[in-house]
Length: 404
Figure (cartoon, rainbow, N blue to C red):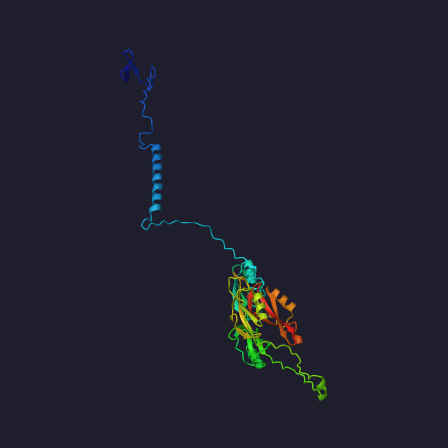
């Protein structure tokens, strides 16, 4: 080895020094021992990461919870000044409401008021009643609007016009007038008249009584019964039988004779007590006494037809075949009112049928007449036609009986 060549040396295990010549960076005598590895560092992220991934996730979770709490507080306290909470509701768009169902208007013309109302209600329509006097029967529907078969929504109104009965007029006091003058006065008022002949001390042809009495009211077309005094019959006599003087010696003179005339009717009658009797018994008692009953129905709790009052007290004197009003009970409860048919001029059988058709009953008294043509006819009635009476009430009629 040249003395100019540099040498590297390091101790050997035996404390000798081995000189390794460096020739062109080639080691002679073996490789140097490997470098010792550095001591192990701490386990974990690299030294330059200050916050771990787990801590970061925890922090994010805490922030989310805090944000939720803040939002909830804001929603419940943002309008705490006036203690109101605003709620936003989102709804689906509304659909068009279904149009109300329509029905055909039924025909109610000619029906009684209760039936007409029921028929309209059965299809869901509301009636509006209008009352007018017409020539139709009372209580019957005479017109309607809209007309039948018209299409109308349920719940709508139908106007029905109902007959309220003929207009009423005040009956004048006709007593003391002649029969012709009385009938003319009634004609001017639109009232009919019926004349019955009665025995009276008044001049023949004078009105001595009437039913109803003056001051009352009747529907136009109703009849007023006039009791007119009839002429007094004159007794007939036969001339006395004359005899000659010769005859007088053998027979006694014949006494004057007269043809027996019908007993004259009394001029007055005595009113019996009929209060609390039933209608038929009261009518019979008054008829036997020669008094004609005029019946008026009034509200009462006694059975239907019980006589509550009489216009003349028992024992009082009234004209023979004069009219006296008696008030009969309509019966307990509210009974339907029926229109009394006019049966004057009808036969008894026809009058019975008419009353039954009106849901009424008939009772009658015989009334003497001097005309054979009138025999068997109804000449008077009470209540009069056109008035009303409770259903099943008895209507009194006077049946003409021919009497010479």
